[in-house]
Amino acid sequence: MRFATVSLPDATTTAAVLDGSEWRALPAADLSELIRKVALAEAPELAGQALDEAKPTQLLHTPRKVICCGLNYSEHIRETGRDLPEYPTLFAKFADTLTGPDADISVPDGLQVDWEAELAVVVGTTLHRATRDEALAAIGGYTVANDISMRSWQYRSLEWLQGKAWDGTTPIGPVLVTPDEIDPAAGLDITCRVNGEVVQEDNTGTLVFDSADLLAYVSTFTRLMPGDVILTGTPGGVGVARTPQTFLADGDVVETAIAGIGRLRNVIRVHP
Amino acid sequence: MRFATVSLPDATTTAAVLDGSEWRALPAADLSELIRKVALAEAPELAGQALDEAKPTQLLHTPRKVICCGLNYSEHIRETGRDLPEYPTLFAKFADTLTGPDADISVPDGLQVDWEAELAVVVGTTLHRATRDEALAAIGGYTVANDISMRSWQYRSLEWLQGKAWDGTTPIGPVLVTPDEIDPAAGLDITCRVNGEVVQEDNTGTLVFDSADLLAYVSTFTRLMPGDVILTGTPGGVGVARTPQTFLADGDVVETAIAGIGRLRNVIRVHP
View 1: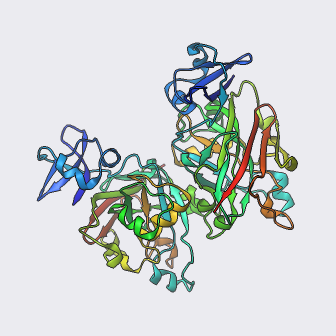
View 2 (view 1 turned 120 degrees about the vertical axis):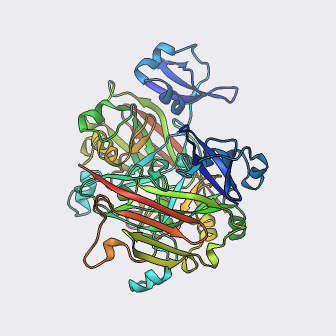
View 3 (view 1 turned 90 degrees about the vertical axis):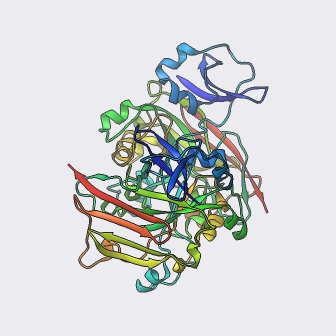
């Protein structure tokens, strides 16, 4: 099944489920609200009318927790000469950090804006001190994100938050795909293109900590609730690690895609 | 003025304002809800009946953002031989991380549980890309917190979140004191005692980045909303920096106090 938050011609939004090639309305203004009200497996029974001109917009608006994993692609870690990590590197973003699958990303000048294509996993049912099997069963679905990072702020201190939590800079979507349709642990191609050129290309099967590992680990210290989201880390090829370093400029087009899920397309807008 | 979330004999809670020695009810179940509905300056006009047996409990339940500053006391930084930082070190907690001013802090065995007495500043009005003066004017009030930290998890990776965001481990309260009554930038004594012994003792006047600095800085990258909270960092004397290292054990009593605000008293409970 495929779910989204869609915008309608009257400028409202609604949660929706894909039925063939048509989006059908679900009884919530967005997917965050829906997933807190009803189990996704039961949601299609509530589907209403087919929607004309429905267009996927920001997938999640009010997750209680947005947690991100750092270095997590084994090929990328090996190429940097490091050993595989024993524990995931985790940091947080805020609900306000998220934006839509085709939204412009507006940032002030001078931030060293970089790309980070990522698989995101959305929690379907509450998890607390879960085993890996329990975590696997609690996955609501998968989507695409880009952990756009402001390197000149990220490295001002050891802690990355201030480079990772700029409002409206992490696109997420366009759709949530349930685990009966895809299995990222078995391997899905993930790519990031900047102005059409491939800058990141890997496969989610090479993640050191897969979605179930991350949900179980995080649930050891904090309860995860329906609609919470974990970004699972980015492959090699980011701009800050290139020689010379490369950052995004005004007008650059960033496309982030995962096979079987979909594609984000975001334009960078730099303001004074 | 002094505000709190108080618990009542019927097991409900209400936001309340102190009137002489009596708590008077305000029209919200807790201070997070109140501060989103009404400006604190106008809240006393809404005060209802005096409350019998009202007792301050967890001050904030649903802040949208809980942001913490790392190393920020100049005496402590100098004693470690470092230069004063140019930028604050920032990381996040979750609303779920917070707990009450006299709540037990329940943690599994083996975490290297450490104390970090801190001044916390609560946002009163929305802030976005604010100047220092605007930030100062937006302060709702001050309270006491203890950024209880699980060192064995904090240092598993460079990013501290997994040692800082265990559910129900950061006590906050007992009251919110408005800026017309106290000025932490001018200097308030802050202490932490473990089983009666003073383990941290400093003055909020020695903060490198004061409350207004931190609110203005954070508002550069993310909008701050009424009820959001920033923990401003801890003085020297934490257990992990002692020789030998000292951590909290089952039954230990942690008391965290700031002159002019109040005192937290929390007992550590270790479970298997």
